[in-house]
Length: 120
Image (cartoon, rainbow, N blue to C red):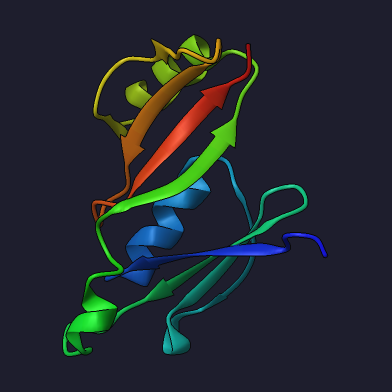
């Protein structure tokens, strides 16, 4: 088996489409009526789905949390400054990790936390 896709949940699909396209991700498909965007990230699809404001609580909790998703970059400092200049909100500057690599966490418009990662 191979990982083929990850799903991320938002409240505003149009805003998410704009944000993730602004990060430089390739938009593969967009269906506003069904609240879905699919981005090609180079092997693994990022599927973004909207959660309606009247959805049950077990769906509401999927929005605005730490996602565990990481985007690899070769130069995290450069990517951090590029995205920050473009208005992306980070929770802090890149930090060296005990395992030797670097992480920087940013937040999408719905409060989902995603990380940039640079290997050791």
